[in-house]
Length: 550
Image (cartoon, rainbow, N blue to C red; front, side, top):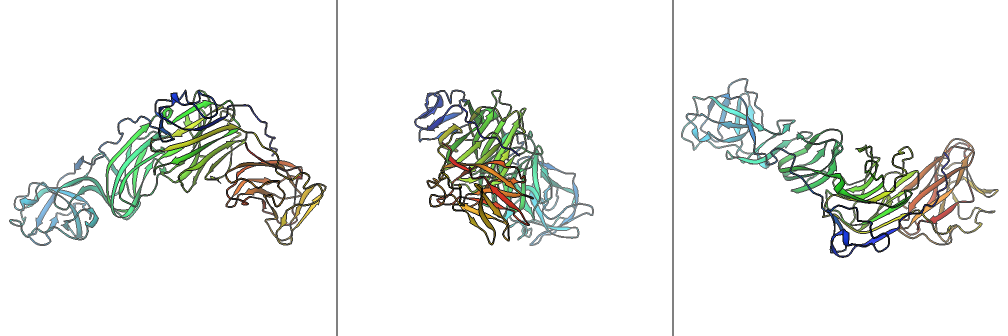
């Protein structure tokens, strides 16, 4: 594939650090248009500590009975008798259908009246007999209720017991039940004693909408996670109240799933976010460019990032963001007002104060975080309603997420860093692997496979073929041509920890390649090859350039 040379486009340059407090209407960027934030909604403000924050409006919760107060009592079953003993043993008539872990409610007992109005968890089943747990969920299956101090045994019985379930929630398994305290009272929780893979859910979401979810976990062991449709949020194995954000995918169900879990869930809330409040965008006058944010802090569960290549109507564009609920970096397209499946959804390691960089070169979108490429570069040339759009901006879900600096520029470059004429007659600093050969073939670097698939490499530093060392955190563009005699060979930049911009060369006719990378560590970058074999030869044009993006 022929990749055209980049043409520099004029456009807005924005460099901004933040001072003051209050609405953005009174804020002027350090460099760039004073009206950059004029289109932003009232939710975007400055916090007075050098940060940009966003506080979108939230409506009422979509969850019915997030406090788990509503319960449903099933058809009454027959109690045959209850012993006056330690532990007390309840016998039900055949066909009761009860299992260990079910919660039952007693009423109408005529002899052991102390149990009337009580909610208990069943345990230690044998045939048609059960004991009543005397413990809360964390130890529910360790001890049973002592009925020896009650007035008399229950011998009359009758239709005096009902199973109790959660009214508003769909429960996948009996291991989820209304919470009880072991003394006959409900606790206002959803209790779980699951061995794993079970859940509670409500169908309250719209696919493709953004939501905030909150729930409280109190566990003895195990873990759980929340889902927005098929979007799995972060696994939780520590007690706490968790606020998380995401986009509903795949289904309309909000789900809390046990992995397994011995514990309880309480105070569940799910609220929809208005997408227009999550971002502020400005017509930057360019599509090919980059946007860099310094993310001062991202609380667990939050989303923050960049909107890029949007149209004025706000129906088509891209969103690149860090999702701390899932621990991923994400790139997602919206087309005709509908959010699409993520183009990138790759695990990242969060570190406060690091940069998020999104770059578009006319064909590929690169997403970098903390000087590392997230996922792989994405070819969006087929997304024709997006590629020429010029609106860029910030995206954030809550005021606990802070952006301390922003830079947005069209693509432009410094001087070529390769030493002049370095490949006119020699191979410079190229190093072969194994018994492969590296020669100069009429100004091209010719690498011939003998016994090592990586072919050869070049360290990108001053002491080799460059006029200066690369700057850590700097964005660099490598351009050149490559051709092969047969088969296919990959070329890429290795940045010290990963391959960036892998390009597969399959043609004897020279193919132009362009790769953007961020210098992760001093002397860390190399031009590398991969996948050589047989009698393959690759030629790299001696007219390669390496330029810093300005």
